[in-house]
Each structure stands twice: as structure tokens, then as C-alpha cells.
Length: 96
Image (spheres, one colour):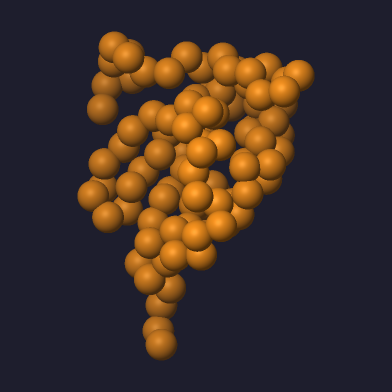
């Protein structure tokens, strides 16, 4: 996917009093397709579904608040984009 495609969400979004200047790039493990998501879209994700895992840099994200915390820390380090791996649970577990 090209970096400057039409219709991508702005890198600057607001949640509460914090302004997030970062893009969310989501990789769907089932389809191997990338897409961009907004904070509003991420807020609406079913965070209580244990069958869908979302990970950033090897860390499993289990709530919207946890996602915001990670995005904030990444912004402080100068990141402008964060990649979220979204996958069914069975695809990330080995064995059993």
C-alpha cells in the first residue's frame, strides 16, 4: 500500500485532551493485507473478544486505554506510525 494514498486517516487525531500525531497501520494476519485505522475505529473494536489478538512490537494489546498508552509512548520517542498485528488467537499460538 502506498504511503500517500488518498483517504488515509490523518496522522493527527484527538482522544480526550491528548492529541495523537501518529498513524495506526493494521496488518490482518488472515488476509496479509494492510489498512489504516483511526482512533475512533480502534475505540469501537471488540476489546473483550479473546479470540482476536492485537499486538504491537510483541506486546498484546487488550484494551483501548492500553493502546492509547502505547501510542503516547511511541509518539514521545518520535514515531509517526505504529503497526498493529491483528490476528485470530489460533494463528499466534503454537503447539497444543
